[in-house]
Length: 585
Image: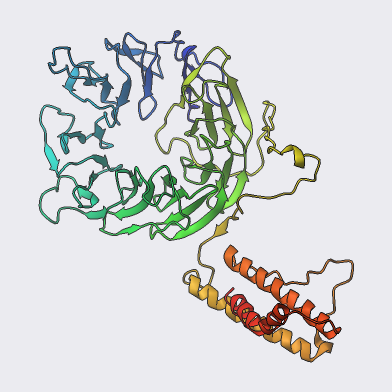
């Protein structure tokens, strides 16, 4: 039986409702529209069968397949909801409050049994950040960060702490995905000159000096983001500082680290300086993509040895999204960028499409791996709210604009478990669509009045780098190093110089000159890739040309000035300097 199409849930000032996914896009009858502006939160279970939402009075749970109301809880102030991986527990969080007399507030984190509706346990959780407990995929263990240590519960028995991971001031932790053995990555910030560090442990082996599977320490870290791959074999750590002491960026400084459970660790060397905007694992767990560097940003795919595999060049981008099957990658520039997207086939490294989703604040792949959702939501943007459904080939299949007096707050796909939707062959031809295509309006650059009647010169602030395959070519074990490339270029330059000398000695063997109709460049345009070196070469050639003109004037009998004669005497030195620079290319 073919899987049903994922639903789309929409929350805004017009209420909460569901929309049928592609190809129909009609309002779903599975969920009656909840009118009004009081819906603050909703969530699906991991398999998409259960749906919970808060309407400002109660938290309700329904079964999506049979429309049946499972439970209703009297929790009017709830702002966060989360199901456990196997739909056993519903976690709810309300803002923590204390009474005016200073007495402690009541527990604000509740864990409910989804089957019976009873409250299993209540905790005090003051911060909204990392409010939800973390479960393993089979719900055998559940973990919470409490007072700088991690408490572990087993089999959803929250009355007994089965294990504790105690290190000095644990700031954050992440449980590994997948089956047993369970692993946990913990982050401890540095203090008093000691470095920050991330350690990997295997549950429940936390004691002893050699208990850690891997350890990575670093000094430049005020906060970190830890990303496990799907197979739980490695973690990527983005370490960030609040202040960049070099003054190169307002937004602090970031570094990317790789830590494997076998103990290996490395700093991922990023070829371009600047912020790290996004890092994402492929679902295969064998490679990851990083978007980094001052604008225009670079995007590169790395393997598990942290070697670059493919470089997408530079462009206006700050985010990367792998499709659920991992065979398509979208590079996008949202937020303060124009919304340009590049859709790539990452098996063959071929560009599929380049759609533009202007003013988008949200992006999500559909679980079927074919469709994309982009949305403009409030409060990030309060005008032109709405959402679009795209096919990855660039066609807009459905568009919904919210009226100007209304707002869209949230929109998302119904989740499905992995493997429900099979991967399909990638197509490069845009699928047909009934939605008329809109060409994005390109804002013209400001031109001062003095230049408005003059021809426009095509000048760029930045030279964009093209995509480049970084894999070793057939017959080579690895790509050439910088030194090897430099030597290779020297050798080629010497070879070319010898060939030119031979041609001068035997004119008969010299190549025939190009026809007069084709423009000829008198100065050879050899480029080193280094703007400073190219500039020096250009200046030297300019000086040598001036010396040639002076020599011609002297031959014609003109009396030269003292400084002009000194210039002619420097010709040999200039020629030598030019030769050295060109051989270094």
